[in-house]
Image (cartoon, rainbow over the protein chains, first blue to last red):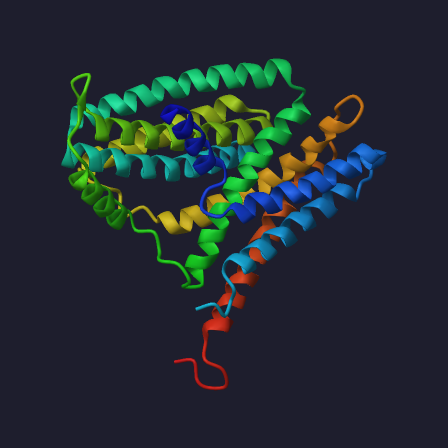
Length: 72
Length: 260
């Protein structure tokens, strides 16, 4: 049991790291992208660029929530 | 592939791998100096063997069973998360909202923890230094493996990426042996900022292309401009990070008065 716990702890630390909100931000945007692709819009030339902008925006939001600029 | 692009791939992989190896080296040195060199080195060796096995199994599985787009989605997403974690720390450090990483300080912290830990022996080894060394080398090593896969496959030249990563390991370990201590002179914070930008850019590029795995035929999505889009992403992440640093700095400066 301790080994299983340590195993999952290791991979959690490795993938999620210090701030889970960043991983959540990435996953949310990619899930949205996956839904658009599944809906048949995967060949759209603007989709990758929109998803890139979405990842940038989601990262910004997660960072500002985690460390507010006026939070000291 | 032109020689300029080849050097670009080699330098990018070398820098990214070097940062990871410096961190692993600091931990192994701390364990060796304070507790047991034998246990720390055996732990590092075990981690390298485990890493080779992990790379062989996952590499075979990813290349043999998954279409390229699924590989891009899996590795790209992981790389993107790592890259953004690094970028977050770099932004907060540049803005003075987080202490600058100091390898000397990290070494002191590790040695204090090593001295405070209980002395437990298993299989003739000091168990604490063995386990800590295994974990550090394996964890940093897996990140190097993902970097080599992404940078190498993206440039269609995995051998150059592998050679650059191995060169980084040899150079950093040799420098550590010569310095007989943690590598405090490596401009780690600047390197981490640069590597964070690269990982975030390649990660975004790959993760988004990889969503094509969900299309009939599993064909990767295509960025406008093809591979050149990586440069646009690099510029975009750099500009966003500078804008965030400026935002944090202006928020912490006193309003209406002189700012020193």
